[in-house]
Image 1 (cartoon, rainbow, N blue to C red):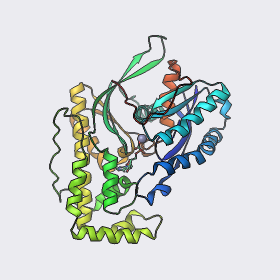
Image 2: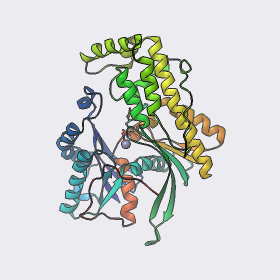
Image 3: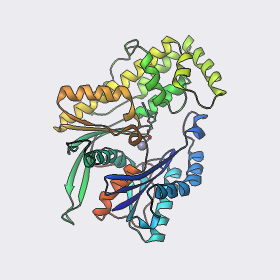
Image 4: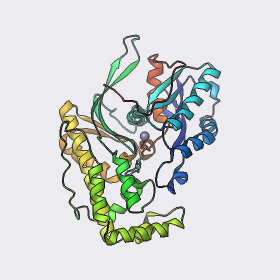
Length: 378
Ligand code: KG4
Ligand code: ZN
């Protein structure tokens, strides 16, 4: 079954064609980073306009790269939420209109479900190509960690009662952030220190030159659900360490230097950072990663599963990957990360999640619409 996936929930316009939820025939992502970088974050109105400009060409390119016409697909999967409503609507209305015009079945996919399926999709691809002997195990605890979300889910698969074959996935939310998402914290700290947008990849690079033990941010203790997250206090703690100090002046100078340049490499930026700034960056990253790893392993323990998936933009963070590997090995837990291209927003993950919905007959009707907040699971 060939599924066309369409994703436009934030600042990437993406389309992909995936066969049987297991083989990426094409995956096209048009990033809007340069549009938003000068504002230090995503500007919703600009994002919608960019999606409108790009959605048609991106879908066309996905078909061309897969060497097929849009009529050849067996179904269409679109992201219905959560995300920016104006952005979501562009992909959703496009997918809906296409499905209607071509008389193809349509399914709505939760963006977070897409991130979870990025892991399963890549795992299936690796397994089919003989690169991995053992398939990912469900039930699993999944940490979805991105610019908009930081949540832990228990993911289980169940056979659909309506049909003997299709698999239906069941999600139970075990924890979530009470304020900022981890990626949002990376982006806000990067903005404060004039490191550019998005901040995560740059902090990841620069932190390698800093001392992660230089600043002790203490531990974040959660009242109530111990599997919840909170990152806004950490972000404020960084702010207090910068405001009114030489680091603020340094950031101001960096901002002025950056303004004249469209793209700045991490090496160039490193040369414009003092050791104290690099130490602060490394310590901040260390604190975020520590919390993510600790909660993910605690969730696996609490849910009594021995399989952990980590997905979403922040899952490409090199320290998070290394620490998760170490901790999982020590705890005897199987760990899966998608490759970086499937960690950040893409439409292959939407097509993969949509495949199971199409198989299970969970079709959308004309009432399908975009939702800024759309909780996943129970
Ligand atoms: O999944 P994604 O593309 O979009 C959302 O659904 O939010 O994630 C984007 C987020 C941004 O906040 C970005 O700074 C962060 O992922 N990110 C990273 C890294 N690469 C992207 N954060 C930390 N380290 C990275 N290497
Ligand atoms: Zn995302």
